[in-house]
Length: 77
Image 1 (cartoon, rainbow, N blue to C red):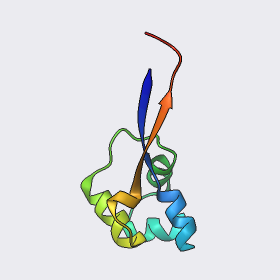
Image 2 (image 1 turned 180 degrees about the vertical axis):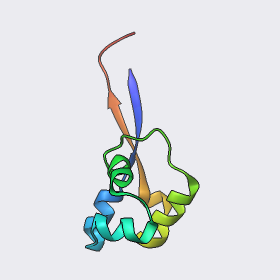
Image 3 (image 1 turned 60 degrees about the vertical axis):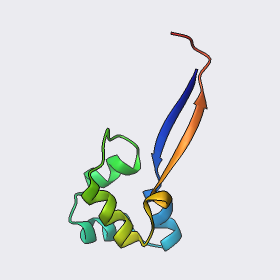
Image 4 (image 1 turned 45 degrees about the vertical axis):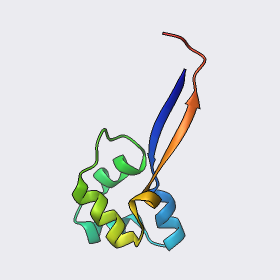
C-alpha cells in the first residue's frame, strides 16, 4: 500500500532563512505550542491565514511550504 503524506517545510525554511521559531511566532502572533505542532506534523489542518502568513514572513510560496512524501507500507488491511 502506498501512503502519501503532506509535509510542512516550515522548520527547514526557517533554517535556510536563518530565522528562529521565536521570531516567526512574534511575526504571526501565534503561540510556540501551535507553531511546534505545525512543524512536527501534529496538525490535521492549517488555515489559509496561517499559509498566507507563513509565505509572507518566510518569503516563500505555498509550493515551497508543502511537499508530498510517498511511503510504501507492506501491511495490507
